[in-house]
Length: 310
Image (tube, rainbow, N blue to C red; front, side, top):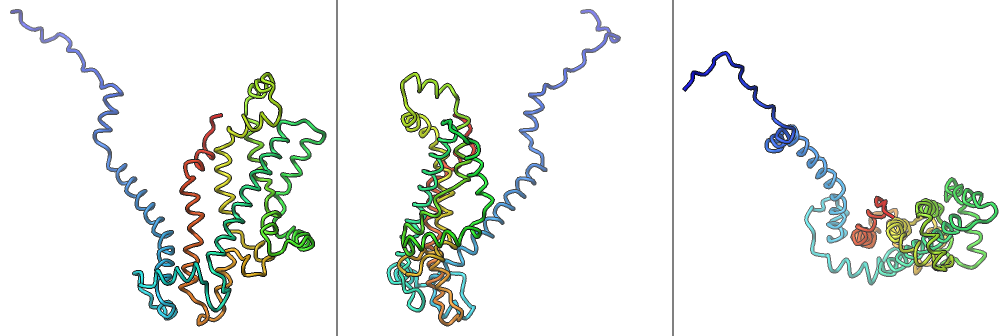
């Protein structure tokens, strides 16, 4: 065999490809990434604890006797009065303040929240449809007049609204609780912006098929708006459920009080007269319907906020 030439140039090793370097980084994650992940999870769990602890404390207080809560030495473990307290709260009510069962208050709040949510969506989607797809004089002016109402807080128009409701004899009624709150400039704006993204080809295709405005609305526009409707329903239901100022003004009868008003009236000046276990149980019951709506419609809610496909 011939001797190897020692002076011959040796081939340089090929540099590792980008895929190889990426695989090495994946196989050996840096400690810094682990540290960041750990800190993120720690912050997340801290936030959950801060939010959940008051709710847990409210639940614990609802299971103890009022004397245990009043003396300031309530333990962090649930008591033995769970069934008795919640039965009395839902079907009997407090004995010293409103004397109205919380079940009645929850029914009132449910009717009001559903009425406000459905009414706002129905009126807003119809008005937005008219503004986008119909041509009439002062079309843009009508939209801007609706939009300007966003700048008027409730406190500015609360007295004239109350005067009209009182003159119509709608005090202490579901109509008086719902009708003044079913107009929504925000929902109209959101539906208008969505309708403007619907392709004009769909409108032309509907005209070729002989579809009129109502058929186009129910067969094309409404199905495309389901995710937006679901997202708005969640927001508006929680808004209607937590409404405080308007029900406080127009309801003087205990049978028409909402649960938010009931909680306020259960708390009196003297701690000796306040049945704190009933108050805490009512607060826990007041959280159930909004949380249930958010959880059950979470997928539609998120999709309606982030989905851009038409």
